[in-house]
Image (cartoon, rainbow, N blue to C red; front, side, top):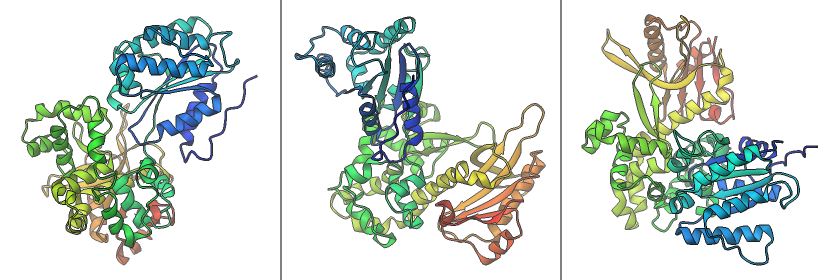
Length: 504
């Protein structure tokens, strides 16, 4: 009889989907070895999550370090001997011997009872760097124990996203062998507000999230629970934490970039990120900003995408067009606010730098981040407001050829047509960070809807939405009350109020 899956420990905040995926992988009643790959940038709590999992299953956990092959093998052997209950340390001559012994523990008649034998190898990229043959050794053993009985449940974990992504890609040895591929991502904006205990103050929560995102380690390990007391304390908090040369967060953005294995010329990569942070979001705009040709920046763009530091978002209205966005808020904040004034910040002038950075923070940090939060809202809790559960959520540009102008649509829900059906638009939205939105913004959205209908897109059930962190005019509220329009502010985004207006 299969044992019930263990419940998530209360000390593990959020992460219910990840916990369910991991316990399902371990508890699956298969008579053969199974492989899982867990990745995610540093500071996301992967180790914390996996250690809790190992405790529940009495498994073997090994955290690799950046060491030579001989030292890494010696560390692994010592940890394995302790797990196996050996009174003396093992002395394996090769990784082949060590891994064969490890898999042997999970064979019929092996140690630790008859339940699944959970093994977690954390920071696996360090081992691959020291012993490049390891993925091939794991592949051979996984293949062997598909034909022979085994209780092995092996999880390979790492923070170097490009390396971890490559384990299962293309013609890699482990391609097609994994039964689980889990990426541990930052907390969503609502979960992050709960984690920082600022959900009662959406204005503070969204500013905090625009700087630090949903990275759990920043609160406890980095700042020792130094949380801004309220919105009025936010400026002082920024100066005493992120902008202080004595804070662990001060150089964190630099470390995040340097930790990626495929990044060598950090100056070039910082220039690419700075270009995006300063509003140059197209390939051509990035190339012009850093003084390179577009073809010359293909590699750094690909590496930053593989590292999950940059994402390319397709224009939902124009095929082949796309824009880049920095996914790590702290890096965006560093490139927009800190890097241009680095010498002054190192000299202890955080208050002066921050006072002069208000406009840049609003335009290059808070504003673009607020747009991403609004799209996340529509992907999640706001989906119930729409007339359809289908469609791609994104942004794009609608061109008015007659007036020779463009409408930037910050939030759109578009269902691409297929089989002779027209593409349909369920929602068009505009986002403003520091502007009280009025009827002029609604007129822009309605004009964009007309232009899309003229392009043979189905807009018969298309609603419009205005997202603002600064509020809405009385005239716009009155118009929304008639239907077809949604007004969504900070209270609505954080679930403290229902959106004003409704869609027909």
